[in-house]
Length: 216
Ligand code: SF4
Ligand code: SF4
Image (tube, rainbow, N blue to C red; front, top):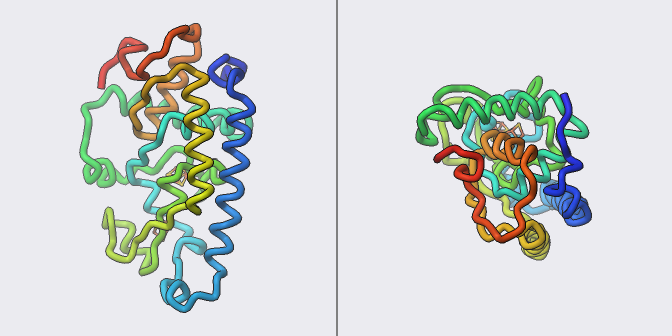
């Protein structure tokens, strides 16, 4: 199992992708500080996720931006190649199936392939959608409800988010990407994998399945 992360899609923006990973590490430190913050309102929330051993939320459709997926692809290829291969296989299968709603997707009870033995294998670079989703009530409700009332979003620190966005913009600029619509995580990893055997484009392009001869 080998992944061509020497491809110019990664190599040409290596330092920006390194910086993006560093910013995600800073984001995680701030999140921990937020858990421990002596804020009565926050303490009453009792975040259930840290002790959750059955992350049903990983059955949900996770949408990612292209650069987020690029960071995950590169990180997983080095650290969790089997999980990445499973995610790419699922992305291919999803791409070949008819589109489904978020609710139908969740209803399948088919967890993210990057979840192994209840743990996120790409935790340090997991998507924003995953890192900002929290449950303050009974975790059992996450099993059957797509959005239990006690779930909430803990957005990243504003200054940090600005820098993350700036680095992502820089990556897209360097890679001559004029636009890249967000996509489902596994499907986007599959999409990246399909781009790698191809030579890099030399003019600005809109990233889409038409590039690799598919549609969606
Ligand atoms: S959102 Fe629910 S299922 Fe997901 S980790 Fe938190 S408590 Fe567990
Ligand atoms: S990336 Fe990690 S946290 Fe997000 S759905 Fe997959 S296993 Fe769960």
